[in-house]
Length: 233
Image (spheres, rainbow, N blue to C red):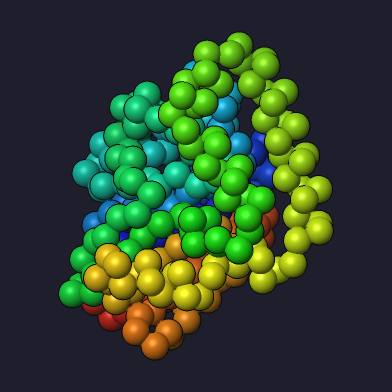
């Protein structure tokens, strides 16, 4: 049995090479898996399940083909696509998981998350996250016309890029103590997350922390977990 974990693809129309990497993975590697876990930021931005485009249709079809073949596909929302909802899930057969999920990987209790909730030193982002994850705000936003939502999303992305230029790398990384406490709270011995774009396998004191990398036009960060262990391919 093999499990695959990916995150931070940030699929968008301006980088078709990354979409091709994803499609190649879904056609060649994913069908051989026990399950595929997408740990957030599959899309660069998501403004509602009613949005339509050639890219979205292509991605939906790839996931649907996988789940129809019998391979489970799970999703944890990221900071860019937290509005992916029931409609997308029903159309693709992909199951949406909560912010934190514990799975048994060959005897190792493994905590899965996107990773943004672990970056508690980034106070500006955490305050923003708290607001946009309020259900009433999300419901209100989704009631707006699609064109309005697109303009709002563009403004948020622009502001986010500007703010990142003035933040230190450490602030945008996970808080070590909080991360350790979180893993302990879920009685896990292994953690897999994305968000920080710092692909690595860290051997901490009480657990192993595996960080998924982001996808680029010439590189796809894919974690393969089997009985032989975890490795990036």
